[in-house]
Image 1 (spheres, rainbow, N blue to C red):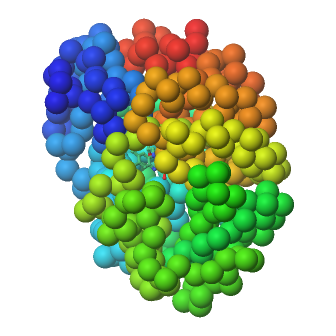
Image 2: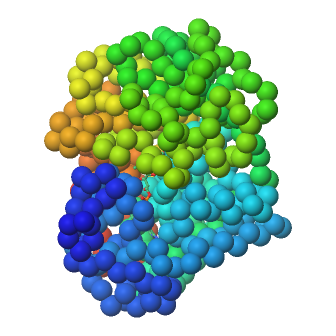
Length: 414
Ligand SMILES: Cc1cc2nc3c(=O)[nH]c(=O)nc-3n(C[C@H](O)[C@H](O)[C@H](O)COP(=O)(O)OP(=O)(O)OC[C@H]3O[C@@H](n4cnc5c(N)ncnc54)[C@H](O)[C@@H]3O)c2cc1C
């Protein structure tokens, strides 16, 4: 660890905060926020930029007890902000409940994932943020307030980028516990992805396609809420052993495949909680665009394959259902998400991203807030119908920019 607050998970950003504090209660947190000129909340450090950083004090809520409270009548769970999805999922499964979606890794904090619009995959599956029903947060004046679904500011507050306050507890929708099987099919042609994406993404509850763009082929990971085997996508054959999406990586790190039916939380994520997710040495980017643009995006990225090859570990294509959250990358539209796992070479990746964005931004691609992108406010504002409303909400709840930082200045602009 370098500096008082260390680095992010990928190690490509060293936090500049002057201090990292660990309040153990909402009262202790409220004292820090009321006292300090600048504060930012730190989750589990899995975003790839200076997004969480501050020139003031970082607060980690990891010492606050998870205090998981399930309400069977309302079908909700309420949990402390720093709780990791993996920990929450075990508790839910034990009491007969489930979340509709999980990201590829269960290691991330609930509040950090929600603040950036983190998602899994599925035509009918919303982002992790879309399941939020209520937030409790400490505002810029140190006062605790709650925002509930249906309140005027709710849709602006959920994907909040840490700019509206420090979230202390979240209430999420739950559904009855369900079983999942995961099957991997190999040899899917990229022509088929271009011309028949809707059929492919509808082949299971949650579908992920992985390609490096150079081979002309993809793998299809199908997560089904059925005990019956899914039909293999045309031209593919079922994997005969467990598959990691990254060449040369140990398949022991991925969740159970080969059609073995079992618990939702041990199959919806790609990675097991007791292993390093993905490669570890990497950067990531992702752009979420209206589904009608998939064919053009596939052709555009195939055209960039040789340029991307030295830097690209793998690309993943997923889907996310529309929601109403103002800064959500699926706000108002069903989307296809094009994710890139790059090698850990920040300068080279930064130089390449404008070329990737030349392909994906004109198709309406919105960057994942927690990953690397080059676009600035002039590119981003037209992509979000409620951009101005978010700026107004921020002005109302944090006029002194207690929760401001360099990332927000750069990305949201004045
Ligand atoms: C290996 C790997 C795989 C990934 N897979 C996926 C994936 O499948 N899908 C996907 O969408 N994303 C994915 N991501 C991205 C990841 O989900 C996001 O970066 C997410 O924000 C990480 O959450 P965190 O808790 O680490 O947040 P941090 O990086 O710690 O913080 C992110 C933001 O959340 C804010 N925040 C954190 N806690 C609070 C709080 N209590 N109150 C207010 N704001 C808060 C921070 O201030 C900051 O702005 C992946 C990342 C990695 C490293």
